[in-house]
Image 1 (cartoon, rainbow, N blue to C red):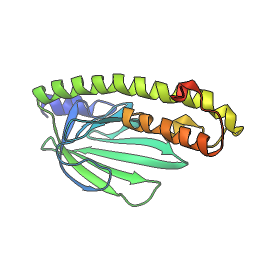
Image 2: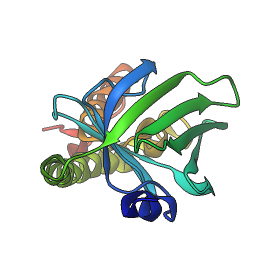
Image 3: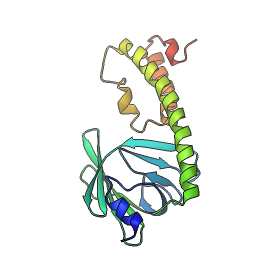
Image 4: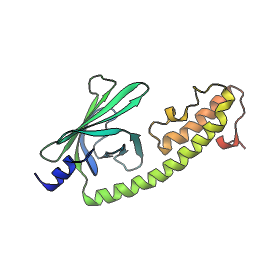
Length: 192
């Protein structure tokens, strides 16, 4: 067994970045997109314009296979990973115990791709942290005005991926809801 395959087989999740060659279904990444597996799954779109992070619990299920799971709204999402003998990784996504809804085949990223993806991912992480921090502060201050701790003010349920684009969109959503209900808009939500 080549050293790379042995090293990958001993991990809780396949190591390194993987570049999608082919995909089917929805939400599985288009060819050229990149995936990184671990305690969170990081996906970078093919144009290298956006990165998404999603918390998953990944465990080895065999010498060359892994299962990553997360719960969303009471349903369990699974991402089954299988390393083929040719070094390609096959990922199959399933939601809520239903039939798989998508699959992708990916190759290991080359060293120059890995370097660029790691740098992009770190820049995106910093932007995500800043944007999601702003949105969370807005939610924390504005939500007591609703008098309902469940809706629409559970920030975490709105931001499963914790990416900057999603978080930036949450503030106008909350502000519009506050306006519609004639509730005050706090400065943390952009009020002047």
